Length: 458
Image (cartoon, rainbow, N blue to C red; front, side):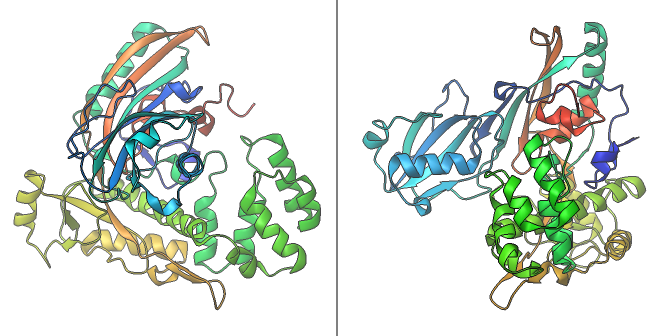
């Protein structure tokens, strides 16, 4: 086991599970370097070439469409469908969120829409690969997982060395338990501060939350963003900051425009943000705490089942919301048998005001970290104003990451950087992050490598 990079430790990720030589390199240099194909519950992979069959009844009041998108996030996909089909947002359903800087396939449900109508619509950045009728809308978490095909570019090593490292990491990851950390996207790259905003909200330090939201420029940001953030850090002046703030920093602008007319009313300014965005900040901080719990567990007791551990049945369909404690709700012997049959998984809490903490030694770890952070689970119900409260109930997440399909790799020529590239293909369950696999190969010292920046911070 090897210690993680400093930028990862700031996200609660403290260890690599492999101790191999780093490949370094970069991912996401262009969208085609990161292909994400959704895997449906029946195992169907929605290939980008359209070579699949939808096993739906082709009856019902919901039209299911398979979308192919490039360099679009989920909100841009939904807005494009809403605008082009002239329907309400409430008519659309998806089962998962995909990366923006990528080429992705994704199933979308549309209430009451006809096949013949959608065939007539022309989209700019979206292609419809297939369609079929079915019953009921899609909801988050109802797909099985995703298949990733990722190109790591600019690997400045000879071909034999790349092959040896890739072989060793692949063999290890295909045969050992992989920690199910929350990945970098959960915290933001660039600007991995969403969990810091969430912590400030939980601690009712609203001025600090605003400073993390608007100030604190990151080296990887566009120059105009850094200028505006630096001005706010130095002046604390909403009017001066707004002069330089790019229009695409929408949420920062909402807060600053309120503070412009209501100086120092930080809680009220944050309350102007959509509840979904405020909840995202809380979820990010909760994810950070989960990563810290998992890192400490790996360092102290590992993945073996212990008295007081929490286990949850696996149904592969919905978020984990109920658990059984070893020694209290279920015997260790029974739980071990169920673990061997893959009927249950060991889980840790993703903190919210209604979660159950572990018992036993893991409870001591959780309490220690919460005390160090200065937070309690009840603090995840944040009352900003009399009219606006944002709460996070919390949930549970399995501690290990299970591959749906084994990792495969191929060394290819990188003509862009006149070097070698490594092509990786693997499949992960929904809610698992590809970067948790990729980091074991790359072990990069800078987050820039994970967002396609060829020259790091420079």
